[in-house]
Amino acid sequence: MVDRVPQQEWVEIFNEVVRRYRDFFYVQNMNGYDWGALRDQYRPLVDYVAHRSDLNYVIGEMIAELSVSHAYIAGGDFEIPQRPQVALPGARIELDAAAGRYRVVKIYKGQNEEEIYRSPLTEVGVDVKEGDYILAIDGRDLTAKDNPYQFLRDKANRPVQLTVNSKPTMDGSRTISYRPITSENQSHLSRLGHP
Image (cartoon, rainbow, N blue to C red; front, side, top):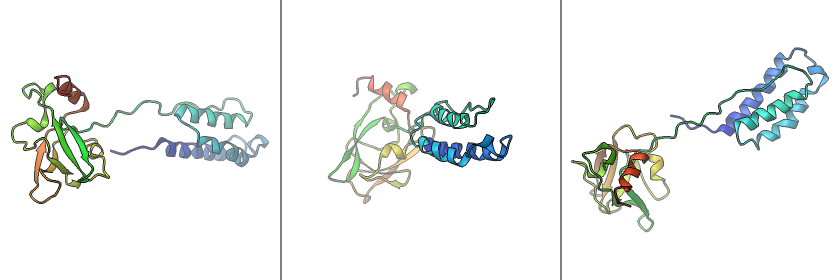
């Protein structure tokens, strides 16, 4: 999995269009226009692009300066990517600021005989209680400066390990494994009357 930063891609796309027109335009003198100056005039606008269609518009306006027909800009990735699936534990987690650690403040009870209402932390063999501190997720230390849900990104389809303890220290902690649920299933749990 990779995170994409479209703004960084848009600068590269703009620069690639400039290079291709410079190298492959049908006449070397660019119809008498200063292609470098046009690049410099339109490049600052890329910093204000908020969507791929905006980038196409800026590039199209730059190309139009060449006063040539049949030179267009089209396409690009307009689709919305699938959201990352977060491996939720079926519980509410809050920061204990004084301890600098996160705690399980509410475990949704669920009805584990139905997958749609399954509550991972109540399954057989999972030893977590309300009030326990989550000290690590999959071996990564979890402190107040971290976002626990970032540690759970893209892990919804595999077991997740939590290092937990009744106190905010590793001394005496235990590591448990749970089979996570997604945000859709967690919302089903909350509809069972467990806010």
